[in-house]
Length: 329
Image 1 (cartoon, rainbow, N blue to C red):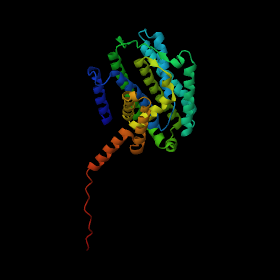
Image 2 (cartoon, one colour; image 1 turned 90 degrees about the horizontal axis):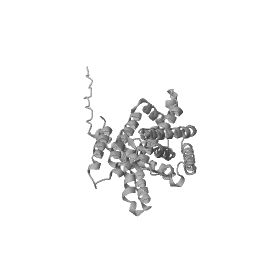
Image 3 (cartoon, rainbow, N blue to C red; image 1 turned 90 degrees about the vertical axis):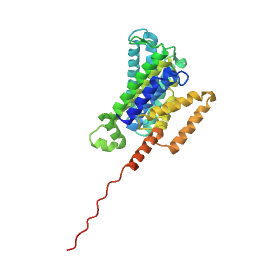
Image 4 (spheres, rainbow, N blue to C red; image 1 turned 180 degrees about the horizontal axis):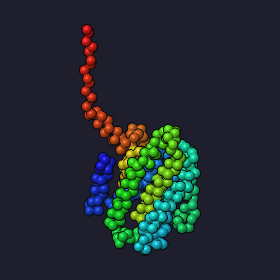
């Protein structure tokens, strides 16, 4: 078991006892951190391990939320309503990701980012215009339904189901990163020309990574719709797309636990500093400036770098062999 897996296992064990410690931390808050943590992991899969900057991830989060919410409102009472709505939401996000990625992947750098931004604004416009999305009111009162005989209307039951889904999503991302496919993505990120010379179709692998990232973002959006029973225009807005960038950079780009730490930090500040109103954005912005200026690897990235350097210093130097002295005849 790697150190990342050990830390993640410790976090999961700590999360298991949250409902039994009233007043210390609220399960609803932890579920919100789980949703945005998965959302940040999806973005990190694209930025940290593929090297692509996208401003369309809110479109995937919101699309899955709208599809899941609409199906739950109509078929939520059916025994298979929850898994069917959840799967449909993830599939819809993947399809939108394939459409946006297929158009944007032909460009690189700032042009790629601007194309994703423009296409995500089209999704936002459609969310405002379509009647089934609720327009500016969004989808409200989404029922949680039941899953495998468990009534998700109970916050405690929903908490443990959300924790299980969160673990499954995180382990999926970890598996993708450490798979041969993930190694190819990192090779393309580090040196695309060299990867192409080795016979890999860089564009095809980047498109697959984009679709996978969109699907994981949709996974987070579907879970968020079930947990909170609400999908609003904020879920498909540019603000949410930039917020996930902030979460990933604060936690550490290219690290598995970094997005979770960044999501917990941003969501925690928004929750506990809600009394100061819009000033919470200023506080988060100042923290971001400090992080970029002094902790460019992010919180988790800096910690891993410090631990690596410490291990190198503690490693004993190789023994030097005595010099060979030539004998004079």
